[in-house]
Image 1 (tube, rainbow, N blue to C red):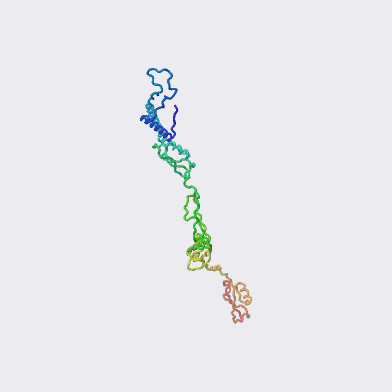
Image 2: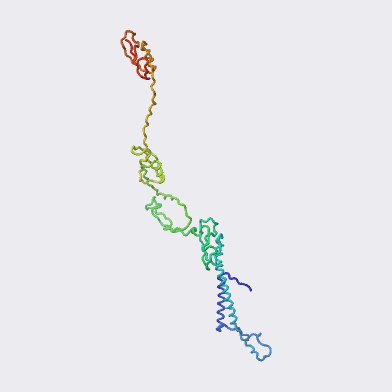
Length: 370
């Protein structure tokens, strides 16, 4: 006997339809709506060629058909049994053995196909941070071996990014250009002469999902300058002032200023002054307090005075003694005294007297005779 394998619910529906057709035919035969088998009176083969015998049925009349109701009832009973067995078989296939199978490590397509063949409803989640091979199953909920009802939902967590999360945008027809005043050449408030406003695309373009772009500073539109405000730098050090200017896109230039009431090295002000709107990358001069103190002259090292010992110059020529004392670094002064004992111009005494120690550069007085 050949076995028939039920693959899916479509086969079950086909069998149910056949049972319904048989049931309809049985009801019609019971109600007499179904035509009897065709008569054999007009068939040559059904005519008896031998003599008529007693009790024989007249020639040309069809024999009474045998009742087919028992046969149909038997077939219906068999089909009911088959449907019952098939129903249990399909329920077993749809729910497996009632447990969630272990598909960890399998690729998504294989795991999903296996679960669907067992009748489970498959849901997918993604883990972009997983280090497992991309596209493989890294988690199952409910966990493998859990008993479930038929058609239960099983969630598979897949390693990798969701392919539908960043789908590339599909270019569509370009929107009609809309004139915008103030940009480009035109008679409106925008810069530059021209016949009229420039048309730019899209009144309110709808953003479409796509790959994220890095944050890039957009350059100013042609003819529209970017201005910045000069920060307040007064009281800051030179280094901090330069840092503040570069952070807002300005170029610092250092100049010297003097204010005795302010600490040395702090910023006294700027040119242009703080709060002024200037073009970006403009030059700003900052005045740094620079106080120059005069240098104190260094004192000459103190030297111990050199002492000179005076000799006994009495009776010597005043001129000769003067020359000698001068060479010794002493100054000479003269006093004339009348004295008949010595010839004129002769030294008769010294002040300080002979044997004294006098400092270098001091004055010695010579007493000369007249």
